[in-house]
Length: 161
Image 1 (cartoon, rainbow, N blue to C red):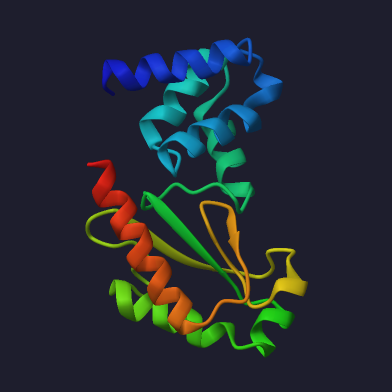
Image 2 (image 1 turned 90 degrees about the vertical axis):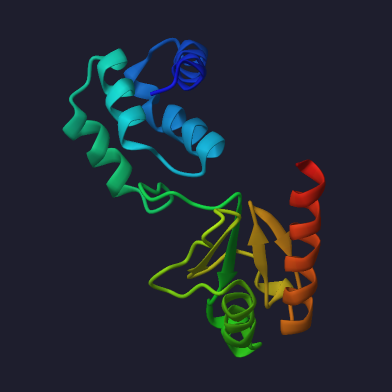
């Protein structure tokens, strides 16, 4: 693990006062920073909190929101709950996958810019069909809006570099 990553983890752990009862909050911060929970970081956290690695992995695998797999900079979640499904969320999902060249089996682009996932419900049924990009809600989606959103995000990423 790089020293900068170790320093970042130490900062997160200090903010939570190395309190093992706050392990979920600690893991949420790590995932927010890295878009997933890297194995070596979980091992480091376990050691610093005086917990077993098995216990840390148990928490990481129990909660569906945690990911042990690397994700892209932009995590797109397409809702396929009842309201979104009947308002045609599947063509939106298909458009995202087609434009980005990803699939259900390989949800992340090679350049690690995008990850496309489906979720059972985003809790925004009145805005259906919806998707989120890093938890920002995009309502009343269409395949055309999906293409525009990808273009916009690619331009944003290019301007940051």
